[in-house]
Length: 172
Image 1 (cartoon, rainbow, N blue to C red):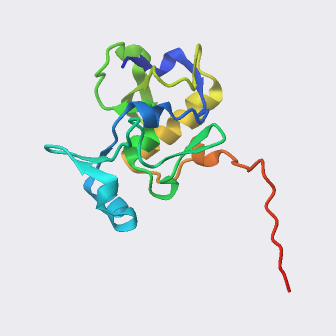
Image 2 (image 1 turned 30 degrees about the vertical axis):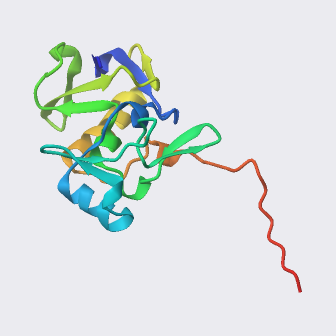
């Protein structure tokens, strides 16, 4: 995986490709693990030597990855782990992946460093748009620091409609 400083990204939109859920294991914080276990059972998680993870199915995908007509979405929208909410972005207090000047981001006077995982095909490279700089990155920073719980720049925002019409009939 290669990380790109945010100043090299024009925009980002989740296109519901599912790559993030297919390529990476999700590390859970204990409260996240507990919520998942209480709701879905312990068998949906696995324990590593010193970490807790969401279980992966035989093809390597997250057990909660859902596919609806080629549109992938998270089955945990109401309790999505922070690692999933933040992907493909890393919000750091130190420039871990180099290019500190291009990664530096000022959030209310606090200097942070934001990088994006280049594996995400929702990234558009170039000069950052106003919306990306002032809305998208702000949302990811607020999620990272715990100032916000809900997100709008995510697959939870996609309208998923069925190509089939459902009819209800009653017989007397």
